[in-house]
Length: 130
Image (cartoon, rainbow, N blue to C red):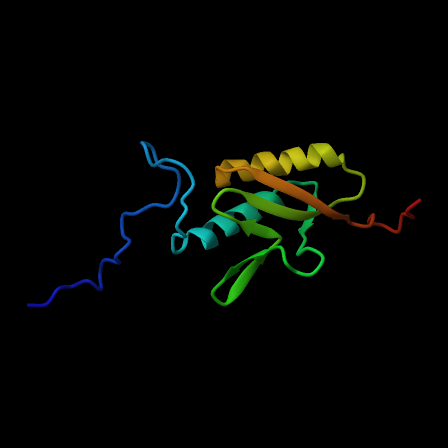
């Protein structure tokens, strides 16, 4: 007797995300595939904020979510929090930008979000910096 397990992956029908009931909340055991989809969604949410020029890898490249064969720079996903490090555009309001990033990420991460503004991009068009 053979079974046709090749047509239905073992995780079919399972979803990653918040649950309800007595075990609700962030998972403490890493869920395969959760970090890469969450890290990618977080990076997309951050870069959609108009005041963000780019993601920042941190001083030594330590701010990243490491995945098989690649990494998502500027995003550290942990079981209980998310950190994002960014470069913002010249002339933006820094506290307002951090709040906008935090709000955007909180929608997809559903856990506390820490925003680190690492740098400010140089003005475009040759404008001198005082």
